Structure formats: structure tokens, C-alpha cells
Image (tube, rainbow, N blue to C red):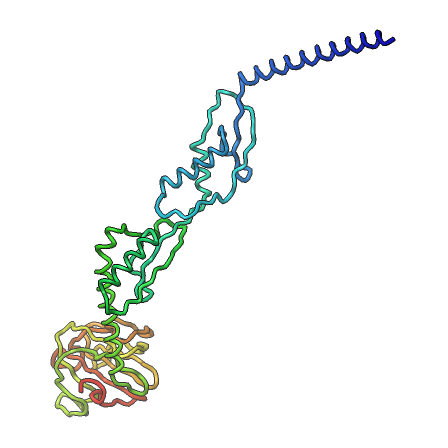
Length: 334
């Protein structure tokens, strides 16, 4: 009985082994044919859109980063592929070639690059940009040593951008040759600005309106209130002789209420400054502003001329308070 069972077990074992061997051989044969005609490759897609085929997905992503760094090496802080590519292993015809370069270029279009650089600022105003914090600190130290005794509000600002065109930095050796010049220029501008602020502070006020500028430099040829044969009444303003074309500045900020010809005044510009204060600029050869335009103190609004009732090129300047002309020399041209 045991002998019969043993013989049967031996028989079936041989049959199973034979079947398994045939299966392995057949599978190997099929795979051999498959590998002869086909090869394994990764199909690359982004958001369902097929880009092409590559051999190695890890190598592909490394090439993407390397190619970006190679082109945009300066100031790259981070590289982030916004939409991760999808990979699917497939067997494709061996005659088909990979298109890794095209895939890389497509993926690069979906890459976010962040750049970092450092601004050096004086009084919070940028004067220079460099590539590294070490360069910025070295330059600031150099400037402080060269300007001992001066109050320098120098700061270093770390900046980030996604636009490489905004990374407008200078190499250290170039920056070292130019930063002191820039600082000197900036200090001069600051001093001039302070001087201008002090000058404006010292200028007179009319009803709370600061008369920050004299309208034109020249010779006073007729004062307020004088009578003349060329006028039907006493003089309502101040005449300042100057060459034709000399720029005329508005004495304070305000709004242009009139800019046209007005009979004996010739071409005249009127500006309302608020608080009942208005100034007139008459006999101009040219007017550079129009009615309704807002102007800042010191803006050139016209040019000296001799239009209207005039005996020569000059500016007739009037100062009016609540509609009544007053003597300008109480405030200007003292």
C-alpha cells in the first residue's frame, strides 16, 4: 500500500516539475522575445498630459535641477517643481528613442525658482545690491571705517524674488570701488534735503499757507500800490524784470484755477492755495499748466514774457487774500 502511494507521489511530482519547467522555459522564451523587440521605459506625464519617455525617473529630476542651476547659478535659493511629474513603466518598441531633453525643457517651465540677494541701504534707501551676506557685511564695515564720526544709518536687507531680472547685484570688487562714491552722493543729497527743509521752514506764511519759493529771480521794477501813467489804477502786484523765457515757479502747492489770456494781464496763471490765498502770474510768454491741474510748490508753471499791457519782459506777481490783493513784499522780496 505504501509502495503504491510512494510511486504515485513520485509520478505526480515528476509531472508537476515537468509542467513547471515547461512553463519557465516558455515564460523565458516569451520574455526573451519581448526584450528583443521591446524595452522598459518610463512614460512621463504632468496633469494627464504625456511629455515623453525616459530611462530613469530619478536621473531625470536630477538633470532638471542641474540644468536650471547651470543656467541660473547665481543667487538661487530654492528650486521647486510645482507639479510633480507622473511616471508609468511601460514596454515600448526598441526602435523608439527617449526624448529626455524635451521632457526636461517642459518640466522646467513648471519650476519655481527663488533667488536671494542682499541690499545695502542708507537711511532705508537702497544704494547697492550684492550676492552674499558676507559681501554686504564687508562693504558696510569698510564704509563705516571710512566715514568715522558721521552718523550713517546703514542697513542690510535680505531680499527674495522669483524674477531673475530683479537680481541686479554687483560683484564685490566693483562694489568696493563704487560704494563710497554712492554713500558720499547720498550723504550730500541728505544734507541738501535738510538744508531745503530748513529754508522752507524759514519762509513766511500767509493764513497758514507756507510760501516756499519766490516765483522768479530778477529786478523789481514796479512795487505794489504805486501809480503810473500806463495804468488806470494803483499797482495791484509786484513787477520783477527777467529775460523772456525765464522759468516761473509757483510759490506754494495748490490748484490751477485759470490759465489763459486776460486782457491787460496778458497770459496769466492763477493758483488757489486754500485758506483764501491765491496767487497770480501775469504777462507770461508760455503757460505750462491748465485749469484744474494740481501743482506742488516750486513747480515751473510758466515762462516770463511781455504779453498784455507790458513795457518789457517781466513777471507781474499778485498775492490775493480772500479775493483782495495785498502787498506781496510783506512776505516775499523783502
